[in-house]
Image 1 (spheres, rainbow, N blue to C red):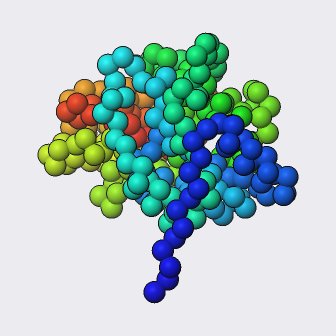
Image 2 (image 1 turned 180 degrees about the vertical axis):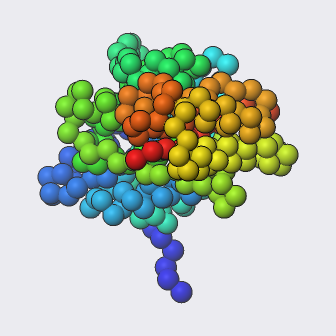
Length: 285
């Protein structure tokens, strides 16, 4: 029998994390970084495994960022499982888990925020005011603390990935940003920490998201170029309690498309019961 994987070193302060990274870089080691809010699932593990391939050292952050939650959102009940997260991180070969407290990331007097204006304007930016300001600010701060060479994100949060890419380019951070395809359950449901909130009946209904997106992609592959027809067809296929948005967008700018004449992405955000779920599918060349 092989020996169990060694749990990552847990670092809890920004100063200690930066000191560790500086020492690694001084040794000429390439640092790969996967920022998360914990409650790790197989999708996160895939990101960690990619990070392991791309770096000499692999850092995971676990931080439930309060500034990206609205006043009526699920900050208090967001799932937390540090022992389980560390076990999964160990299996992926993670060297360090950075697990700071909010007061370390946002000390008394903190007042600086980052806004990526155009990419954050629509979609989740419209329905979750302030969300992407919180995301951009915490990602920038984590990048400054961890000082990675490469950072890995999932494409399930497509708008977030686009915003991070823009942030890094605009602020000349010099970090390689890698986006990995959405990891799905065998039945097609996009993996998400919030799936734990779904009852069995709600989870069955949630499968309508991926089915609607896959059907739209197949219609486009068969030659459909009318964006409105694709969106309308997907909307009919959804079995949900509320639709926040269902939009076909330019894959680079996230502006709305009415005709597929360039790489596109169909994005959806819905409520199934009390649980908000997002998903997307890329369409076109």
